[in-house]
Image 1 (cartoon, rainbow, N blue to C red):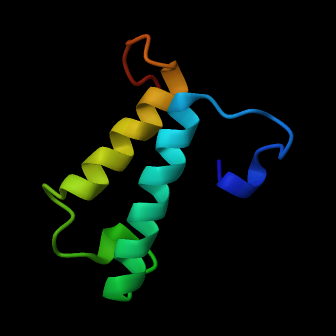
Image 2: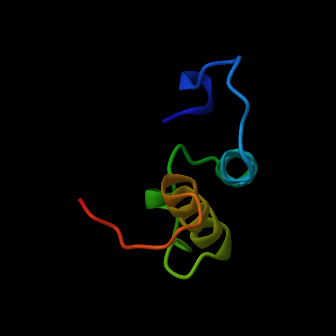
Length: 71
């Protein structure tokens, strides 16, 4: 889900705000390096910024209640 997909009137919880912040940081890094995706970056393995983003996505999905990824 992209930030623009969320209803404007809905109040964001702390997890959504942290996700938005992490996504902004990730996009800034991609822009700075000239990438459209992290997948083309040589530093993707072990990248702290990307790991932070993935954790923020996970936390926004489970609202801090734990659990596992289930696809």
